[in-house]
Image 1 (cartoon, helix red, strand yellow):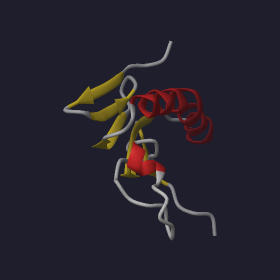
Image 2 (image 1 turned 180 degrees about the vertical axis):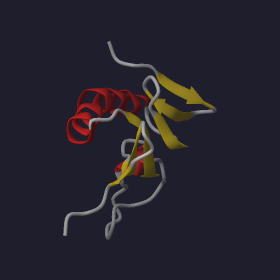
Image 3 (image 1 turned 45 degrees about the vertical axis):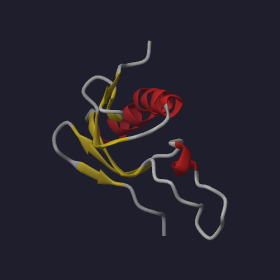
Length: 103
């Protein structure tokens, strides 16, 4: 069973029990469900294996925004609410794990 998704005022604020999405984000319903499943089945277990702690929150950098893909006129998946850029994971002990490009 997939954890609950919390939506207030049209935006997703939680991707399951106790896992906040900060700031809350507007996204397509299927995207919200997929992110919730991915968070509970992939992200949280990976962080627990690496750091020995549970995931408390996901810091997002970009969700719904009506814009074209970089350098093109084709609309980005962000324009359809089908994309979420993750910038940071915060663990239950307050540790922040920043997400950045690999050099």
